[in-house]
Image 1 (cartoon, rainbow, N blue to C red):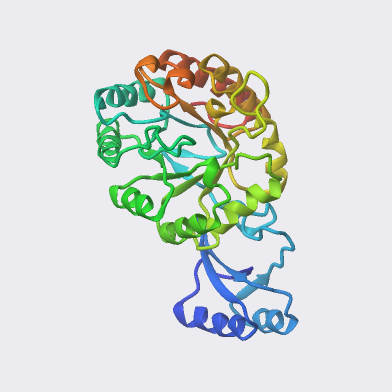
Image 2 (cartoon, one colour; image 1 turned 45 degrees about the horizontal axis):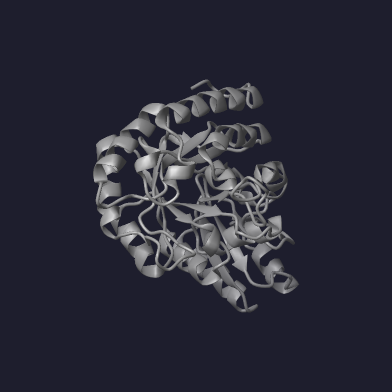
Length: 348
């Protein structure tokens, strides 16, 4: 990883370091951070001649060699100072709350508009809404392109940025063209490296944030963080890790709740961690407790499914979406716990 003495190198200096790096069979990937741009060496960075030539350049401060499976997302990376801001919240400085329906019903858009306003009033910073849905059963509702218009209209009405899941290149393009601020990678695609690369390339140079969920199986933490590396490797490091429960399920819960991995992730990566308690437990009655436990473990935020009338929803909403009142109380208590963990932070 190349650290320049200035915030950003001019084109002629970028060309010079690129020539040196490419002569050793690697390539340079600029990573634009909030404060300065760093230049990642992608490939085997152990070539001592390459390192010596780079260190000899007068405009280079130092070369960091991070021997880790994830060089960009590693906690020792210079990106540890990178800040991700969405919905008026800078993660790590205040808790982020993402809330909304699992699935937008294109036949009943009024429910989503009502939900959007209700979750905003409850304290949510980002509006979630499922436009396209991965389903185990091929005959279940798979989502509808029309729901993207409903999602963006709700964003306009509330002023909230939106989060939605994408599962292929066509959906990715539609979401970005519409102005989706946060792209969600679901548990079924968390190890779809082709899709992760496509998302990384598509969000390069944008302010788009990617919410990466943990894969369905109980994979290792390194596997989870390395999946984020696939996205960040294209130049946009604004990736948020989202534990959401894993398989096999714990008897009585939808999945095996995994909010306890938050401090373990924070020992290895600088990436913010936003927990999804709704999919972890799969039942509305259990969501608040799981959400508060996540914040107590050190989560930077929560992604909660909510609906003004859960019984009228589709997808997972009837069983796991909380009401706006329950959401508001959960957010209130979560803020209190977050403040206890961050006594020096300004109060909301």
